[in-house]
Image 1 (tube, rainbow, N blue to C red):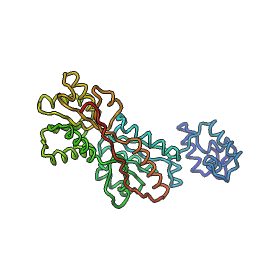
Image 2 (cartoon, rainbow, N blue to C red):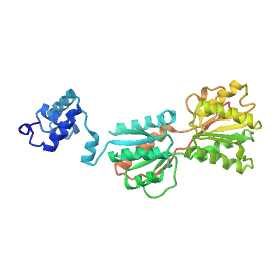
Image 3 (cartoon, one colour):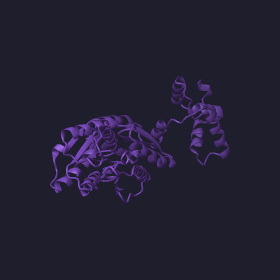
Image 4 (cartoon, rainbow, N blue to C red):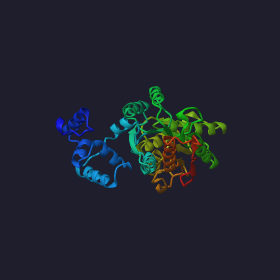
Length: 357
């Protein structure tokens, strides 16, 4: 823009920024201001809905902005105002229905209050989580929602030097100092123990555990399984089948076949999640193994389809929707500077006994 056509409020830096943006084809705030015949500051105030701008002028500016296809630069706005409307949410997988349900619930709560999600996928890898934090923290998100507490040492340092309000999902931590104490979830250990007690109560004694991914929450369920069987004097380490592969129907089928061929005295199997438990049920049908007459099968999370398996799958129902809603609501309290009365919210879980056990 030539100097003689600049508005009074526009600086040479604004003009240079405008040229750079035009080079990329992006409509700028200055473009909207020029088309509307007002200053960039007036455009900014009008689009934010400030009361000092007349309603008729607000309508005019918004109409011009819409006609030009203007999209506000939220990152630049956050840097200028020290405020952001973006919340970084890190989850292990998007292919897992469990986390999709959590994200849907988080979105509904945040969006209603003018906040938007930035989603990062860690693939159950603390190193990937660290990379995502390094990429997103410079954008100054308003808050963080993190899955669990399994962070690398470098991630812990990043979180320590970037005191962004945060809430942890799906796990619980004992009360402590600092932001790490905020969490919404349930006791994975207690849930693993509950399923194991259910199998014992049904009369099963040779109970195996099949795990996949081996993330922190799976290992906590395994710990609950171990505690109950040790108390009953029935723990046998050889009945643990642990595989770091991602959960899948195919993996569940392989684990079931391996377990039955190598350990024929097993009378019940506790799978760490429904994905592999469903695969095991399908493999049992292919092999002609009667469930639960020959071997009982149990899962975890009560994913869609588990109640439609043959036979329907016994599992632990986890409150994914409520975890998302409560965690997002807690984060909004922190962002507003309100006192959070319950720093650790235990939503519990529910045993769902079905015909597979």
